[in-house]
Image: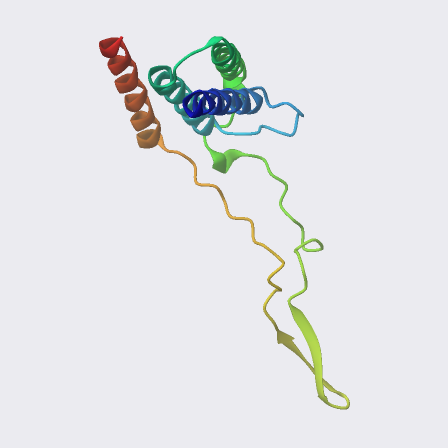
Length: 164
């Protein structure tokens, strides 16, 4: 019983992973270029390697096979979206066109006016509150990372053929 629940869970994770890759490949919502070529290629290779690995470890029943078909259809749609949108995708994340905040919208004010004596004001710099979170840039996968992901996919596929 627990093993079949685990099979359903893994098949569901695979379907959600492939659907999220397809969503980013087709850029639903038209919110700009979305992701770069390397990030999209990396996520495609990750999803394909996960699918090939799960093919080996999941005992497939009728329901989990249905989830597998949904995942593979989503992965095929992701590949098609990547191929179609490839020319318009930026080659790396540094070329993504995000709006830069202007001086008016620079974030919370980190200075305050302090008056120690009447008529004598000075500006003191303070730290921003903890509630303000800085956006960290997501690290872009490079060629080596994509090559390693492709090698992992190839190894899983070769092992899959060897095992049967």
